[in-house]
Amino acid sequence: MSDIAANAWSVNAKKAFAISLVRPTKLEAKAIKSFRPAHVYSIFGEDEQIFGYEGLEINLDFNASDMRPNLRVKWRNQFEATGETEATDVVAVLKDYLPEIAFQKKKDFEAAIRQTRANWTPPGELAATFTRDNETFEVWKSSLADPAVKQLVKRIQVFVPLFIEGGTYIPTDEPDSDRWTIFFLYQKTPVPGESERVTYMFNGYSTVYRFFLYQTPPTPPQSPSQSGLSSSLEDLDLDQDNFDLAQLPCRSRISQFIILPPFQGKGLGLKLYSVIFQEYLHHPQTVEITVEDPNEAFDDMRDIADLHFLRRQPDFNALHIDTNIVIPGPEGVAPSSVVDRGTADAVRRRYKIAPRQFARVLEMQLMSKLADSVRPGIEPDMPVSRPTKEQQHEYKLWHLMVKQRVYRQNKDALGELDIPERIKKLDETVASVAFDFARLLVKAESCKDDEPSEKANRKRKAEEAVGDSPSAKKAKV
Image (cartoon, rainbow, N blue to C red):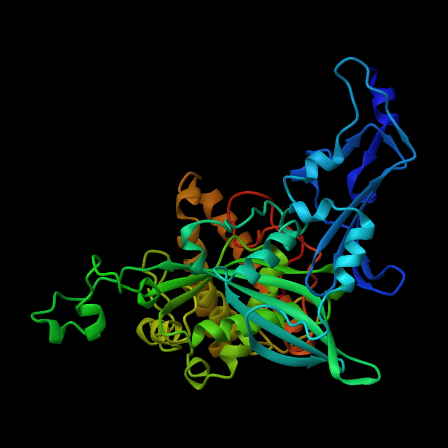
């Protein structure tokens, strides 16, 4: 078959694919929110094309509350098979991504969702309630070991390849399912004329996995009583049936995080992240809260949320640049700690933030405290007063602190460059980081209840000293 003929029968998968949240009515299921996927390459191939149809429509409906799915595929014309060349079997492809219940007839789907009980609530326990623009939202949480939660996750996991670049499903049927906690975000709306009845509409969700963390004591204890461990940990016997792994120290990692497109731009993602953060901040076994391979939009949201939280903590606000440090000449040894390292690390551990993330937020906070005359900004031509020697010195110490972290982060890659190129690349990267901080600080100050756009899906590049060229935009210095 010629390329021209093939193209005539090829359909853009994203344009053909429509997703809707629906509610049952007496006659049919009525769509209340509709949107299209961000990615379909992991389902239909890198070119995101479906061969063999004219007028192809892929409609995936979800009951807005319990997310029961229903798939309908229709077309105007289908390519007649010629030898081994035939139209893509869309239904067969999607069977790998949807539960069996999604393939029942539309009338059966509509009959089933009309039978949803009037007092339906999301599975698990209520973790938080908040309002946004006079609307009420609830976050529900539970272990994946809960059968109702497992069922709901299986229904919505198709959103992972559709909205997370490179996203993969979490294992729902493995023995360690109790180590997964799922947080569901729902909008709660009173039913007009029925004071005691409400409806729930799914807005998004997040998954968190607990990694058990072995921590070596600073020095070998002379006796059990000196070990600093609780008696329950001292007496652990892995052969006993009553051993509870959930009591071990762990890292709690946010693995998947999705706010559906109709609900983005309202600050809901930032609020959901904050609820999850508070949950594990007060979780005794969690030592550190981490995130798995975040994209650029999530990084922005996380930076702003962490900055808002830490700015409310007196011990974080007390951290400062030691301006008594003397910056040595070209042959001298650079100071290893511009901010007291022990104090900063104690604050970081108290709030369970990963080292790299805490370093970024601290640098951002300290940059916000620099004098206007030296503080990097996003308006290069903005007039400022002439800086004093003290202000210049404080800025140089801040710049050195950022430079040292970026170098440590990219040490292996930078080591492959000649020294002049290494210095140039490092300076460009620090300038890009400073611009990024300035942008985030403006966002944090002016839109405290807003959420950075979740449409971006690029990974953060500002701190990669070797790779793509840094942004053409430079921070004002």
